[in-house]
Amino acid sequence: MKDGKETRCENCIVRQFNSLRAMSKEELKKVSDSKTTKIVKKGEVIFQEGEKLNGVYCVRSGVSKLSKLSANGKDQIVKLATKGQVLGQRCVISEEVSNLSARAVDDMEVCFIPKDDVVHTLNTNPNFAVEVLRHMAHDLKEADDVIVNMSQKTVKQRVAEAFLYMKNNFGEDSEGYLTLTLSREDIASVVGTATESCIRIISEFKKKKYIKTSGKQIGILDERALEDMIDS
Amino acid sequence: MKDGKETRCENCIVRQFNSLRAMSKEELKKVSDSKTTKIVKKGEVIFQEGEKLNGVYCVRSGVSKLSKLSANGKDQIVKLATKGQVLGQRCVISEEVSNLSARAVDDMEVCFIPKDDVVHTLNTNPNFAVEVLRHMAHDLKEADDVIVNMSQKTVKQRVAEAFLYMKNNFGEDSEGYLTLTLSREDIASVVGTATESCIRIISEFKKKKYIKTSGKQIGILDERALEDMIDS
DNA sequence: TAATAAATATGACTTTTGTCATGTTTGAGA
DNA sequence: TCTCAAACATGACAAAAGTCATATTTATTA
Image 1: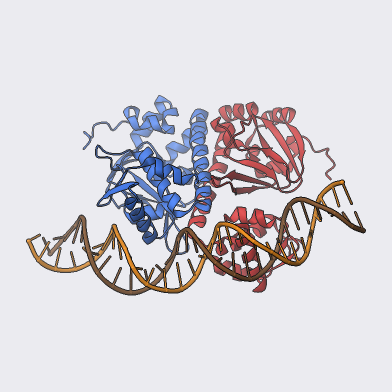
Image 2: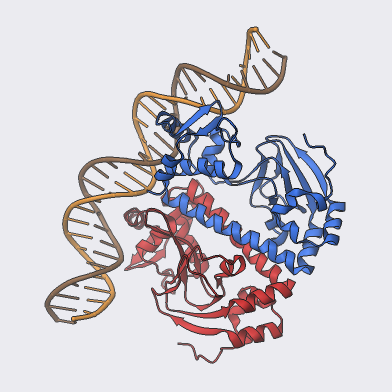
């Protein structure tokens, strides 16, 4: 539990990681006055696909999965968002309904910032607009990489990649287990495969001593082996 | 052949389709003075993956394929860009090297606009920045859709979808053939599959009278059948 | 803590997709 | 127009991945 006192955006460390750092003192103050902080419990929905958002969500802690329902009824996780990331920007900018759902993987703390503040700052502060643009350009680049991975790599390679991604972006604990713990179903949904296939590959990796598991937890034992299988 | 006289951005119809329309008269004038127009022949490269771009390319006519080389040596086409689309924005904004290669599918006419003009306008004209942002938000949304398609749909569904996409975005001629003619290899590369698999599916569709072919050309005969197989 | 539901795991089988070989057609250039 | 290379096409087979059935383990909650 946080002390709950750090509720001014001006002082929020999370801001370091996102485009809000390009806001002026006054703009930030205004945002800080109108924002609301909320706790989202593990598994709860932040917003749904098709929903119109009247603001953005700034992640203070925890992890969120952004997913899209495909025609065959399966959910595809498109992105995992963590501390400092801002959700819902796209909808606010393009004034369209969200094409993704956001759901908490962990218990989360998020700040809701009303649309108007963001839009107003975008229209008046070019620094902010360019900063947002830079983030979006980066996201788009990442999306391209995902497209290439999805279409050109085997499921096995994608699972290996997912584990390395999780290690690099969320870290591991003192015992060598990945900090971010996802269910097998969620891993399958990140990788874009059937849950059974995903479990089978995890079993195989375990047998080959590439990874270890303890309940849902996964620890990487042989990073090199995983890397090697990715760029074959 | 165009008359070649229409070389001022202010008068260029193409501008209607892209973010350049948010530029002021003066900005546009400046761009127009510093831009250079060039002809790119079918198959020629506009820029390469890993290259640093010192400007953006505005497509006046023709079609370009944006692709990324995957680890297994295959090219994955991430996007097809046509009249009005601006290539290379991301690199200019994020000051990184390009993550994609651009190659002409048709004979093309493109305008090269130096980086400085774009960056300067971004930093001083919020309207322009927001307009670019809006385009980028749209691209990102499309990229999400592609990710979901790639991971959740079968190759057959993706081929069907590619044909419908080509019809909707590039049209068809008086005889009902798709205006955009891609090689089987390029179609495979859009869809993310082996060329042989792609050809086999085309043969199957032809046998079932969903499409007709004439050389490289493809015509849709039963749009409904293709649509139905997509959302199964 | 017992009962129940949900998640994980594995086997058996089918379908999908890729690969390699090889033949055919098409198109560009000599 | 002929030649040759590239693109297209198809068969045969192998590998990858999905599906369904069914245990087994782990959580949840009554």
